Image 1 (cartoon, one colour):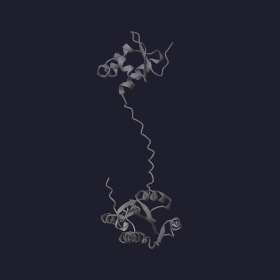
Image 2: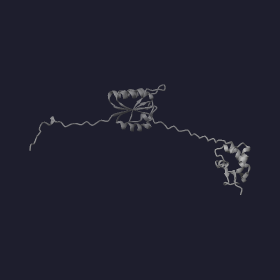
Image 3: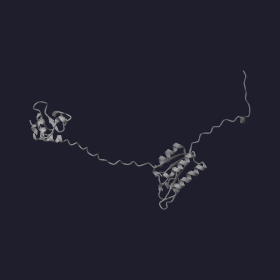
Image 4: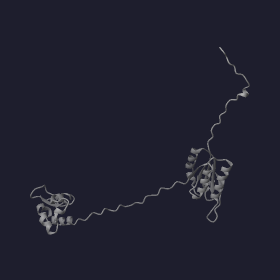
Length: 229
């Protein structure tokens, strides 16, 4: 048996080292004049999906947003309002560029509904940074209560004419076989209807007319009229 012995200084054969992958460093930059403090939990949840949140800043007039000013988790940058405007947008842009230039963040969450941040977002993405642009949740717009218009029923002159003829006979009913001659006096031509016969036409309007069983003495009454015993 041959045994091979390897000897030497351990320093000449160092153990391999492994570098644990680091998560992206996320900076949350919030336009406090454009985003409510009550919704910040949703922003935090989104940011944690992207990496480790290392920077939290909010920009705005803190005199108008006391809730943001008292939030110890976020570094507040006060931008006083003057003539209806403040410098919060510009300060947020400067902070984002500074963090990117110094390598303090590798991902950004820009929180504002202000469309003026589009150039900043596009520039950071062009530089290789991951950027998510979030806005405040939109309130659901209630749908107006629209009252449907009642359907207009087609007025059939023939129906009114036949109802007049049948109603004149009262509860006894009008002989169905006599509707032809009676209808002709008022210009009614049953042959020009879809049903072609009087019984078929009457049965097509069950809410208006009630017919006796088929037979030579069969009569028709208005549906609302009781039958004479």
